[in-house]
Length: 63
Image (cartoon, rainbow, N blue to C red; front, side, top):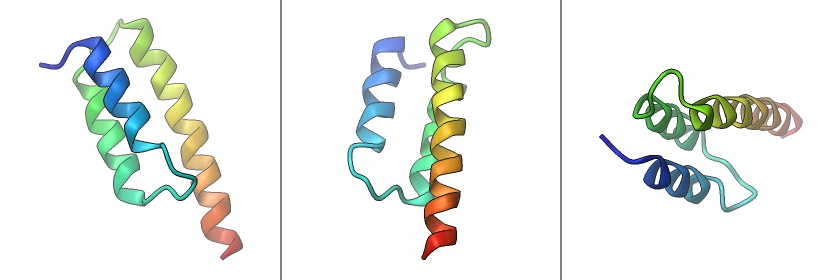
């Protein structure tokens, strides 16, 4: 199991570039699974991931 700091660092590294591959969204989901269900970090990153999914969908639709 990863620590919260490791999950947060890995999550940020997945989304460094403007172009977000779909596989990075899946990897981010897997990282969230490493955190406890009641973790505030898990909740915050879940919200961020949902926003990133929406942006990714809009970007893909615009192509």
